[in-house]
Structure formats: C-alpha cells, structure tokens
Length: 204
Length: 142
Image (cartoon, rainbow over the protein chains, first blue to last red):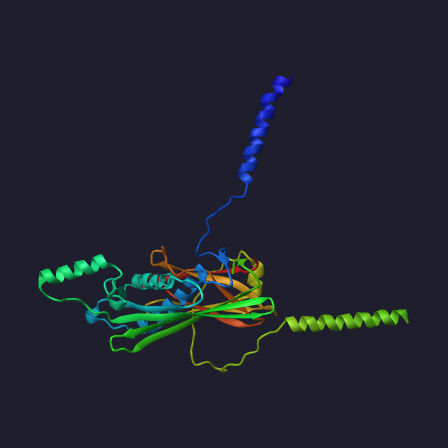
C-alpha cells in the first residue's frame, strides 16, 4: 500500500513545488519607463521628470516656432541646430543628454530640424569621425561647403530644496533658449517640476 | 441633565466635524468674460470608461482642436468633488493609417486639480503626420 502511494505523493509534492515556484515574486521585473508605475524620489530628477520636461519643451517649441512658421532655414531645408552649453546647477550629477537627447530626437522626428554632430562647444565635435570625414571631403573637393547652424540650444537645470517639519520638497527648474544666428533668443521656455514627500515613494 | 450633556457633546462634535470638513474641502471660484472672444472648435469624442470613480470625480467636459501643421488638442476637465484630486495623463498620437506615432517624450504626466476646479490639458502632435489622438487618464491612488 505504501509503495503504491509513493508515486502519487511525489507527484503531488512536485506539483506543489511547481505551483509555489510559479507564484513566487520575482526579484526584478521590467516596467514601462513611460508608465505610471516607476519609482519617484523627492530628492532627485527621475526618468519621468526628464520626459515630462522634454515633452513641455518640445510642445512649446513646435507651438511657438514651427507651427507659427517662424523657423528659418536656407532653401526650405530643415533648420540646423547646434547644441550649446546646458548648465547643471543641481546638487547631483546629471547627464544633460537625459533631457537634450529626448528633445533632439523629438525635433528630428518632426522633419523640420536636424542637429549637427560635428560642431560643438569649444570646437569639440560630438562625432569626431564625422567631423574628420567632413574635413577630408572639403579638402578633396578643395572647397569649404560647411553649413553653419541656424540655431543653437542652450539652457540650465536648477534645483531648489525646501523643508517644513517632516515634509521635504524639491523643485527642479529646466530652462532652455533657442538662439538664432543673429544672436537673438527666438524661443525660451521654463518648466518647473516640484515633488513633495517624507520619503521615497513608488508612483507619482 | 444627563440627556442635556449628551446633546451638548453631540452638538460640539458636529461643529468640530463640520469645521474639519470645511477646512479640508476648498473649492475654486472663477471669473471670466461673459461672451468669450475665442470660439473653440469642438471635437466629437468617444469615451471608454473603465474607472467609473475617476470619471465621476474628474469629468471630461469637452475636447477642442486648433488648426496648424501640427495638430493641437485641448481637453477640459472638471473636478466634480470638493477635494483635491490627483491623477496622471498621457496623450497618444496616430497617423492617417491609425498607426501609433511614438515620441521619446511620451510619458504619464502627474496633475492635481482642486475641488470644483476646471483645467485644460493640451498637447501638440509630435509630427505633422499625426492626425488622431487618444488621452489616457489614470487615478493616482497608489
């Protein structure tokens, strides 16, 4: 009798183990970076904050410059944009490309703006190989046909912290300016993101 | 005497309770031009309600659009309750073939709306190819 029940017992135990393993909470899980279930912290700029700020910036730029027909470029070509200095005035290490790249990609997708990767602040090219190829081409063709940027994008990220009792508040101010070849800021925008809390929380 | 004391206690509790409720519920008063100069170009919309509670509290009043190469959409929301309400929203865009147009800046954006307040959510299409939109609203209860 005992020997007849053993396979059944083993099968039951095996099934139970499989079920338990199936129900076990995983240690790590993927979340949608544009979803509403990502981690929000009070004291730092989170990934959704960059997306939120970039969304405001791109919307404002399209509305105020592109949709308004104020974007100027030679011969109806897409306007050429160069990235200037984006100052990080926050207390944390910030890669400003978290903001700027999103804006560049979004503007590129409009078909109205292209960004140069061979011209940068202080003569530093984002893509040195592309700059070398451009220079070689100009040398071989014996002519300078380098197009100059129509606009440059500059800005600043500022942080302001407050505390009242147990409640902490952080404000991150994103400021951007689009300057034309004439040296005039033809578009400017500011987006402030303020977060409050006593400790890190999940979700907005 | 005993009844009177109970009655007094109940009255006092009611006053305190009402005062607390009044302190928590602050609603918004507004004033605007009686006959607005701007005329909104309203959009016929289709609504899919899965969170009836959110829909009751934050009601979609109407949707309007503005002409331009890039589609501009504005959605008016009204907090029908007397207390602050938090929610997240995101716009999605679709081209003339109904295919979603992705944007690197697309994300759920947190918003708060005061009691009885009316706000506008506006967004610009990420490309001229975007012809349709969808607004998603989700409660912030977590």
